[in-house]
Image (tube, rainbow, N blue to C red; front, side):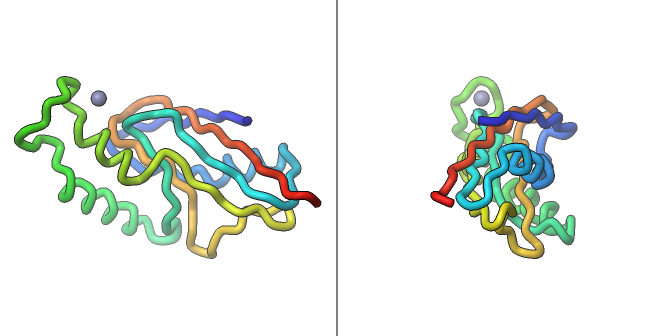
Length: 134
Ligand code: ZN
């Protein structure tokens, strides 16, 4: 397992981590298999989405905020970050990407994102490679 850290600067922010995962792949020297990208957090997640037009990330955060308001009647969790927990579970705590011929198999417009929902904080990202018989 490899781990790297990401420092976020806003309460809610998507930080692209594709390059960090690519570097981890290079150092692991996996040719064929897959990579699991996992965050050990309850108010941050991981997702894959468009990295070409930054407005896509803007619109995703806008939509998540509409679906899960920060202050909604009935929340009980006393930390005041219930929305952060819900959004983190909506994104999920991991994603898996196929590795083929030593490269991440991502579409032209796809990037891997750490999804911060209760920042700013320093987040850990764990990366683990699964190697196929080569
Ligand atoms: Zn909490």
